[in-house]
Length: 290
Image: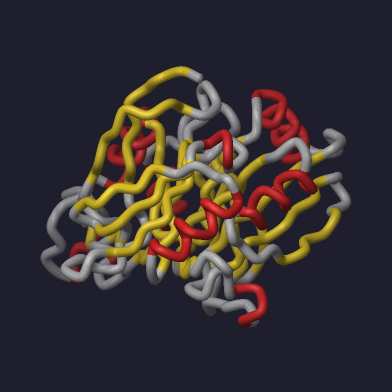
């Protein structure tokens, strides 16, 4: 594995991000809340990945075999976010072919989907910036994907009119996982995101704010699980780190425990999580849900 500086760009907590000066005034009063929806982890062996994440203390919800050869499993959380384990066996369409190519490079995170309330507004913004997109779906179940050859390709946007939470049997986990609260991007992709959303202080609805992310950015020198992969890790919120640590010890899974301003953290290396740095975080008493 290659060492590289990467950036953690928090996209779960919604904080105001204003449009650049000079944007059309007819968008006055519009808002574009964005939050994490799910992260796809592309794996070569779905059954093996299921066993790994069950050993990490997650409840697995069955997926289904799609017509394009894509097969999947779900790790659902009580806040509506999820991790999706996904594979493909035949290049029957462009997406299946893309997953097969990613898997050939090694297991690891492939895409992050961000939940939005107004994809029409975002599609205008992306088109203004010359970013090639495809909008698919219908009504309030739309998806924006970015061209395969663009640096922002690993980010998808999905539009849902109502947040759907799965039944408790699928959102209750032995490790106490409550939700996906952070995605760790390679520094190059984080730079591209910064150029798109340009965080500033919010000063009124008349500026048609993009509600996007926490303004904090953290950098760490960790090994990139798969060379060239844009998404390096995720953070899962838990009620308490202690039972997670006991569970991992029983399973023989090594994890690094640290205490920091955000709270208590357990970091599982990518070799134990199919190519993803997996952080369990018990938020500190004086911090928000991040």
